[in-house]
Length: 294
Image 1 (cartoon, rainbow, N blue to C red):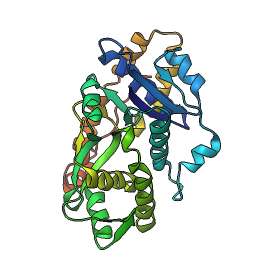
Image 2 (cartoon, rainbow, N blue to C red; image 1 turned 30 degrees about the vertical axis):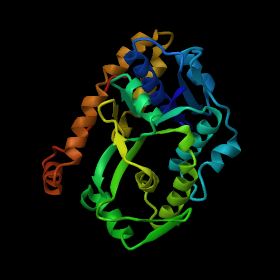
Image 3 (tube, one colour; image 1 turned 60 degrees about the vertical axis):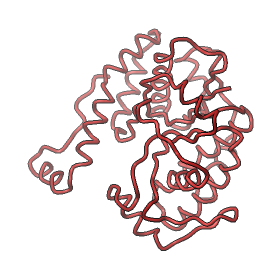
Image 4 (tube, rainbow, N blue to C red; image 1 turned 30 degrees about the horizontal axis):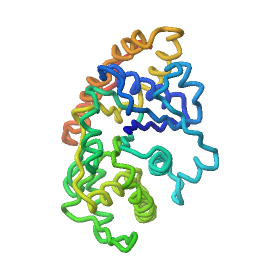
């Protein structure tokens, strides 16, 4: 069995992102395969059913409030919830697991990915490059961690000049490899204790998966607009105004927001040399989210 897995816990905005991502998936698949299912880990399943309807291929695993808290780990980080979700899915829904963040839009049918996952391959969203030469935060993390080491399950982990950082907007593995997940959690908690930065969770996945085998990335399969948190109020307004619109009409309205284009524009600005960003700020030409109708 193949499973797309979403974590949509907490805010209405996160749920709205998930609606968009799930509807974009249905747009890409020519026909629904009987071995393909969607797992939505959420504290508001009724809200999803109001938007998506009662689809037989969408499931809402029940999770207690105590379990949500436990999944935050000893570091008490919301980023660690996805590790617990993947462990639960592997235990209750064995097969090929593809977790993705809610702020994603499918651009291709993921069926080929599941063939590779079934063959034992690991996927994460995108290779962001080596820590030592990455963006400002990556380089700062490298400088802080390069003299440390962490032991998990008898294996020693270090950050080296060759360490690649993968974005964890996608995490895919076969469920029989779920024995790695407690080790990812243990490593992440040690990393947070060493240097309390949000990216420690994805660094833990990157380090542990890479020690097991190569990691592939999937940027051509979806857009991951992680840098556009400002659009969340607009997504909420669009969904609130949708009423009883069909899924097709709702998806068309969401596509009109042109989030992939805005994502690329903001990313291009973010990646400018520091002096050019400073110059644009001084001259009033810094990148800003344009007005969006919602």
